[in-house]
Amino acid sequence: MEPSGRDVRADMEKESKMKAKILLLPLLAAAASGCVMVGPSNARSLLTLDVQSPDTTFIDNSVRPIKKGEATATGLLLYTEGDASIKAAMQNGGISKIHHVDYKVKNVLGIVGSTTTIVWGE
Picture (tube, rainbow, N blue to C red):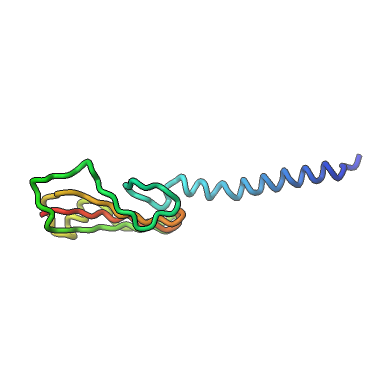
């Protein structure tokens, strides 16, 4: 028995929906995996441009914030490089005592991103 036009149309719609799901799956997997790190920030979105936020868990008022050190890590899709650690930022700024730490985050659709750790201290 030959399938009716309605059956063929329904099969084509099912196939089209399945293809869309299959194509969407790698994109969602990449976004969920953190391929491009976003870093510690108060803002979470697919498009984050130049957001800066403090690490409020660490403030030492006995140290003066007279020096600034920065360290950056950048990423593109599945590749990320750089050292955005507090230690690297301290070394780059010649800092031995930390007053506080800030983070600067950039992220464009989970494709390109960077995190900069900014350390203030003496």
